[in-house]
Amino acid sequence: MKKPIRLTALMIVLALTFLVAACGKGNTDDAAGTTAGGTGEGTAAAANPEDKIIHHIMSDAGFNSEIVKILKAELAKDGYTLDYVVVNDIIQPNKIVNDGEADTNSFQHEAYFDQFVKDQGLKNISRAFYTTFTPSGLYSKKYKSFKDVPDGALIGIPVDPANNGRALFMLRDLGLLKLKDGVEVIHATLKDITDNPHRYKFKEVDQLMLQRTLDDVDVGFLFAGTAVQMGYKPKQDALALEDGKDLPYKGIVAVNNKLLGTPKIKALQKAYESQAIKDFYKEKYGDAIESLDDLNK
Image (cartoon, helix red, strand yellow):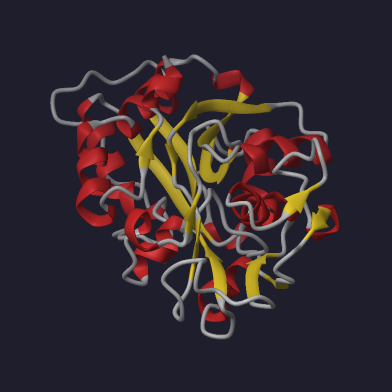
């Protein structure tokens, strides 16, 4: 029988936040991931108890861990128990699921997942389903529009390769700079700038520092969750905002290949797509989070 996931085995310093968006730690009643919720009164026990337990790893960044209580309640309705752990690590979760020590994880967008799996040579992990898309944006405490941003302005952007190009693409789409033809957003870096008529300067920082950096730059990149936490309304306050689900930054749940298409994974997907989850996002984050249920059909 698979042992419950233990937090102490996973605590690694955060190098990169998911999905896309950092909003702080979630409202878990059990940060170490102690199983709760049971299988529900009157639910028939499975022949193998493990078939009714989902071992799940969640990030403490963003809103992933904030929905754990809802996920547990929704899964309990279908007779499943969520054995979860909340971590501040984006390296080990994929390796642990790949090795079969956990069933699933939720902390990353598809672009990061694809690159990580390729770089690490992982063979036993796949995308199970899509969850949400949270458009990142460029914000400023000094200016209301890029029309007001002066030439030579300092712009804060993520240093990590998976997100570095997101800010550059927003500037490109506004016609404020040009990038090398054919470069993809997940590979774009400052070296790909071919024309910078406004002489913008760039400060590359770790994702955990983006919020603090906004005080020191003219314009800064923020994930949607971070922006909302700071009191911004992305579609109203961002100087530039990502648009469309064609971007490779769609949130996903990853799964060990042996569990693809199994009832427990279908139950987990159903929980993520529940109206209760949508209502929580709407109430707390307004229009900053877009559901991707239609991509799972």
